[in-house]
Amino acid sequence: MDSYNYISIGKNRIAYKQRGKGKKVILIHGVLSYSFLWDEVIEDLVDEFELIAVDLLGCGNSDKPKGVDYSIVAQAEMLKNLILQLEIAPLHLIGHDVGGGISQILATKYPKLFIDLTLINSVGYGYWPVQPITTMRLPIIRRLTSSIVNPTLLKMVLGRAIYHKERLTPQLINKFWYPFQTPEGKAGFVQLIKCINNRMLIEITQNLRNLKLSTLIIRGDADAYLSRNISQELVKDIPNSRFEVVPFAGHFIQIDEPKLISRLMREFMNEYK
Image 1 (cartoon, helix red, strand yellow):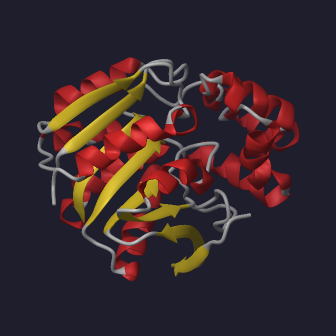
Image 2 (cartoon, one colour):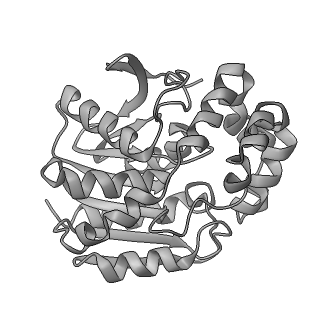
Image 3 (cartoon, one colour):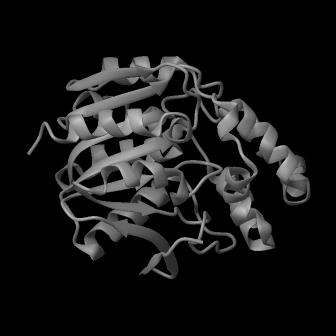
């Protein structure tokens, strides 16, 4: 696997990649993925930015402790502490999926840490969790999740999340599958979906309306998992925001159109030199 750095946040060891020199950017992934999801984006932006891609608690190469809070609120606090310990503020904040929800919390609670905000196929409001996560959250199903999660099921889920099917290669599936190869990895995923809760994002709606950070909202037009209502309402609620729709891109837009979203992100981040 790729080279990682590690930092202790409280009792847990958090993995992250750090590449490039220049303006600092933190990249936050969502459910079913980890920092590798940003690899192609990092390659496109590394000439101009210092990019920090973090594995959330319970994901990728980060610790996966049992019985610990993996909620988006707890993840946001972990990332705030990581930013302070690494002394990398102020920086550009970019989140995808649940990472977008975590980014909304960070941006509204700690705006002075950030230059601007980019939300990519982000969760929001009460429109999530979505299938198949909602089913996996049922106690009886959750007890079975570790045994039923397998490469075939993962391929089926990814098949709906990636528009360009030729990109869904065995190598890509193996990267997604990597954390699930161990009992600890599967247990971490189960704990993560158990802790997912939309209450906090519903509660911060007014805070979004008061947010002063410039915000770029990107949606893959073929996202089969998250409602377009999320992006539309975020644009309506966040005062200084803009909306970019990427055609022929699914939920994992970093896989479908990495160069296009890298260009959108570069142009946006360079507006605030």
